[in-house]
Image 1: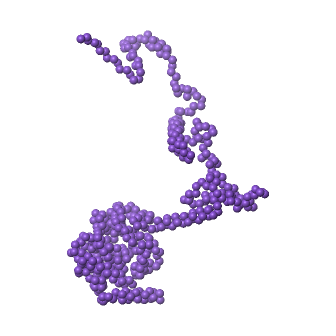
Image 2: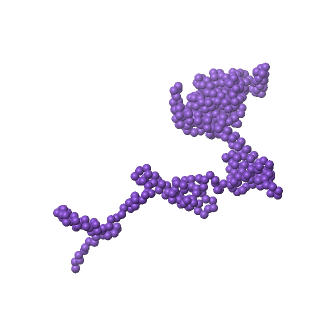
Image 3: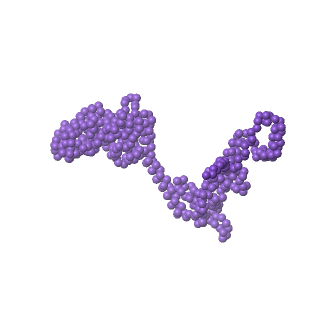
Length: 484
């Protein structure tokens, strides 16, 4: 078997042929003058390579690049031109073959008058005082009322002239009314059409103003107006509240939000609180004045307030009623703070879950019987110790929490001396008696016995109509006494 000699081939360089390495030489050769002369002759045999930047430095008009500021401006100008070229390509790609094109001129970095490479014939029409695309407005008719002579006379009542004038007058409409480019299309509006458009524009402005005012001053179903939102933000910024979590209940008179309590200098704030925001609209609860105008605690202030400020008085009324109930140790929310029409109270519930209403609570027969006796006791305590009538007591305003009932929503509560006080109490007794009798509580009293038990009066069964008529006569007598 023949042996073949394998020689390792040098791999080719991707950068072309590699120059052979110089042969090694000794130190004596380097030091010799003969070798030095030989190297000098070899260098002189190659032509000198010209510096590409040397031509620029020899030109008289070349900018001075010794300044760093000048160099930075030149580089920025070059970058801006490249950006504008890219912008032109994007504009061309975006518009395509469309007849209506979108201009990117406002986004350009270098404008034609700044770009020295631009053509002298190129003019940016945005920088000119006269817009070539703007239609000329019709000329005004002179004082004499007509122009021209003879057959070519044109009066101010000319149909074409009036139409163009009406189109030009559309520019005076409100900015939110989109009139388009009627002048550019040579649009001619008749007087009837222009008057209709003008009246529509005026009506839209008034409607928009009414909607804006309603939005600014009213509290919606599950939202708040900007002023109320600002008050809530201020409470958070002051540290009274940590954060506001969301709406947990809505009613005809208020919206209730859950929040995490913060701190106050005067008193501690519970970990969980509620914000009762009284609605500033009077649409859903229009008979509020029936509960407050004859209350001696607010009668002097009520007559001087407008309907909007009555809402603040309504919140203040609930605060006073809750404070009076708290002194009598009646289970109810504890007042933390009052800011205009926002009342901050303690939260009846646990871990963001509100306590159920008595209507929704799943209670056994024993618990329902216990709840009835507690409600009866609270009604007696409210009437005899607090000198208050709830005036809206029902299964919707009674909560079941920690094995006992809690009373809420006492903003409409009045004193027994109120002209309608006993009438409201009789209605509360009817609601309570009807609910517990339907739930199977055999010990529940009827509305007459319950009323007599709470008040200590003795109204015979069936004398409800006579009692209400007597109360109405008393009220009329009081009103006539006030007028006299």
